[in-house]
Each structure stands twice: as C-alpha cells, then as structure tokens.
Image (tube, rainbow, N blue to C red):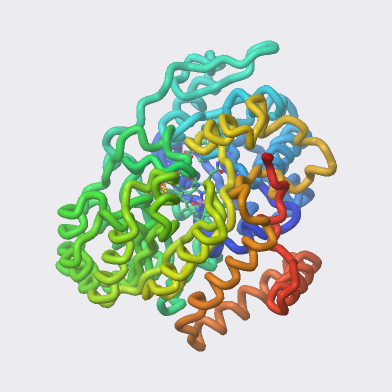
Length: 497
Ligand code: B12
Ligand code: SF4
C-alpha cells in the first residue's frame, strides 16, 4: 500500500505555534512510517506545518502522491485546520481513499471527532505504530477496521471501536524513526546554549506522574524505556548520517531511571560521540552526581517544568514535588555547570495577586537562563484538568472539541482552546505580572549567536506570514510600551464564571 502521513496545514500562523521553540521533526509520524516501511509499504511524510504548505499546494501534493491511505496527526490547538485538511483530502482524492487520524487530540476524544468530522474515517487512539500498520493491512484486504485494537471507526450513524490496545512493551523492538522521510535540514531546531543546529530523539515513552494539565493517561499507562545501547546507536545515526552536533532529548522525564542515564553517559564517552545535548526532566528525578555525570557526557541544558513556587499551586497541579526540590535541583544543575530553563505557570487554581507576587519573587531568585511563564491553563481533552473544569463549572459537561468546526468565525482553532484562569485576578493584571516575571530573567545570557538566530527566524516568518508577523510585532511593541496588548493564546475566550 502507499501510505501518506501528514502534519496538517495551518492557514494562518498561530501565535501559540509561532512562540513554540521552533518546529521539530514529527517523531510520532516518523515512528509510524518506520514500521510501515519495515512491513514493505511505500510511505511518504509531508510536514505541512513546517513547510507552510497552503491548501492549494497540499491538494497538488495529494494528486501527485496518489496514496491509498492518508494519515493525519492532530493536536488540539490546530484541530480545526486539521479537520479542514481532512476535508481537503476527501474533496481531492474522493471517498475511496481512507483517512486515518491519530495524535494527542483525537486519542483523547475519538468519538467526538468521528461524530463531527465526516471526512475522518478512522481514529487511532494512543500509540499509532502497530495500530496503523494493522489497520492498513486490514484495509488492504477489505477487512473490518473496527476489530483492530486501538482503532475507532464510524459505522452507519454511530461510532464503534476495537478493544483497547496495550502500549508497546519493548521499545527496542521498534525500528528507528524514519528520519529519511523528513526534510531534516529544514527544521530550525537549535541548542539554546550555543544556537548550534540540533535534532530531537526520544529515549522513553510515558511518565508515571499525573500532573493536572498533562495529556498523559492514554500514552503513559506504564513508562517504557529504550536501552542505552539502542539510544547510542540512534545517536550515532543522527550524528554520523545527519551531521547534527546538538541533540534535544524530548522525553517527558529523561532521568526517570538514573542508572540507565549513567550507563548512557558511559556509552557516549566510550564511543567518543562528540555532541552537546539538552534533556527535560522532573526536579525530583535528579541527583548532583547524575548531573555532573551528564555534564561530562555533553549535557549543557536541562529544562524543568518548575510550574510554580507557590506550594498550594504545586499541590493543585498534582506536581508531586515541593518548592524546596525546585530550588535544590536548580542549585545542583548550576553547581554541575548545566544551564537551566524552566516553564512556569501563573494565574491558575485559586491564586490571588498576593500569591502571585510571592511566587514571582521566589521565581526570580532562581538561577535560570530562561523562565517561560504562561498565564492560565489550556484545557486539553484527556487531561485531569478537563473533568476538573467541568466539575468547577468552567466548561460545560457536553463541551465538544469538534462541533462547529466549519463555522467561519472559528476558522483559526487557536483561540478556541478553552483556557482556565484564576477568578481572583483580572486577565489584564495577570499579563502585566507575567511581563514582570519573564522579562527580568528571560534574556539573562544574550549572545551574538542568539541575536543572529532570532533575526533569521524573524525574517523567515516575515516572508512566510507577512500580515500576521507585522501584527504580532505591533502587539509586542504595544506590550513593551506598557499597553494592554495580548499574545493570541491569552486572548482566547475566557471560559467560566
Ligand atoms: C516534544 C513536544 C513538543 C515539541 C516537538 C513536537 C513534535 N514535533 O514532536 C514542540 C516544543 C515543538 C511542541 C510543540 C507543541 N506542543 Co508539544 N509536546 C511534546 C511532547 C513532550 C513529546 C512529543 C513526542 O515526541 N511524543 C512521542 C511520540 C512517539 O508520540 P506522538 O508524537 O504523540 O505520536 C504517537 C501517537 O500520538 C500516534 N500518532 C501521532 N500522529 C499520528 C498520526 C496517525 C495517522 C496515527 C495513526 C497515529 C499518530 O502515534 C505516534 C507513535 O506512537 C508531548 C508530550 C508527549 N509525551 O507526547 C507534548 C504534547 C504533544 N504537546 C502538546 C502541545 C499542546 C503542544 C503545542 C500546541 C504547545 C505550544 N503552545 O507550543 C505545540 C504544537 C505543536 C504542533 N505540532 O501543533 C500537547 C498536546 C495536547 C493536545 N491535546 O493537543 C502534549 C501532549 C503535551 C501536553 N500538554 O499534554 N511539543
Ligand atoms: S511530569 Fe511532565 S510529562 Fe509527567 S505528567 Fe507531569 S507534566 Fe506530564
């Protein structure tokens, strides 16, 4: 079979996406592609998000590729565009080409998606690698898709599903992601420490924590780890074949098993792999010794979801660690010579202005190179936050993430992701407080490379999305001069009382 996998197009640059670190290779699609290729299928990946493909060009690409099956990866903030992408596929290729959706959004709400988006025929809920392969083989022989574990299918007026698919137990049995199908040199991913070109790699799947805002349930029923040997083989590939000298390990919690990471560090040194790397982990999954070991094997940056220096907020978020642990991990990283970046949340739960002031004071005292603060929380389906928001009356119980997607006024799905803010501080004030928090620590280590990188990135955006870029600059300028302009992710409708 000829399978086309795609990251859907985005017709107008979302600020929520524009402010994401950069586009990175869609490893989820590359894993699915690798297994399909191993089974003898012809696979193509089109990353319309990266390439900025417009609908007419997407339709031309479809006519050229002539796939037997199309698979789309769907995230919540871009779900409306993704639904329009599915409709475009149907309009261009006709009903004989099945359209399969997968990814974090549809995995959480398969029924809602199938009930409202006729163009999508099947949803793969959860890990897609084996499920998509099995589904393609069933479709090729005209079998019953609804019997495939992990697959949801429309039948008549209703929606049916196969049994729940257990997560893949042995990650080392998977082929390495099919990076050769991606335009690897076009992703702008950089090491934040040196701005050296970097690429991404996954060494585990799942996270045992259950933070309130995180889409973890379907993916992380149990945590699974690649062996250090598998990881260094993949590292040799990205360094040797692709020439990258920077690697971002994008696992949820890289250091869950400290022995595994210590062994990985040994192997990196034994094989004389010279590259710098970044890892994301939890503040309670580290020791000073491990950080020193990581530093000597090339780790230059760690990122933590510190989230808050307000103990009450940490409890509300179910983070499972304390502010003392945040301080200690940041100190250890600095002692080991590893730069720290933190994400931070403000204006959530029942926070008052006084809570926020205290939290900001504490956050500013952390020795970090970047503290990225977000105001409020997006309510993604499949997170513990979703039922909490319903119980608190912030979101209606029958809220649909798909209904009304054809509505012109909802054309850009970004502003449609419901957000939850503390009811005690007005949004305008929250945004002012965020500026105070971020601006003071964001640019602590400016460098010529950093300025060059930002200028290149800006120029690229200006060419690709001139109108939006000018509008965003104007918003930022107003914000910097103390006006009340917002980033678009903050301008989404304020849900709730
Ligand atoms: C690293 C990361 C990023 C990176 C890189 C993204 C990338 N290209 O992979 C960056 C920083 C760029 C990023 C950006 C964003 N991210 Co992000 N990100 C992650 C993170 C931590 C890991 C992603 C990953 O590599 N997963 C591992 C791979 C193997 O899984 P996967 O990609 O989900 O793919 C598997 C399945 O989903 C499925 N699948 C996926 N696509 C398809 C398609 C088909 C046809 C099929 C059958 C199956 C299938 O099969 C794959 C293999 O098993 C996840 C959390 C997580 N652990 O997943 C959040 C996560 C995916 N991100 C999230 C969000 C919200 C965003 C942003 C919107 C945030 C923002 N404001 O910046 C943007 C949007 C990006 C976009 N494409 O639209 C949410 C998504 C929630 C949702 N419901 O949409 C997550 C789940 C975190 C959370 N909050 O819970 N992200
Ligand atoms: S520690 Fe990170 S990945 Fe794990 S549940 Fe919390 S936010 Fe999600």
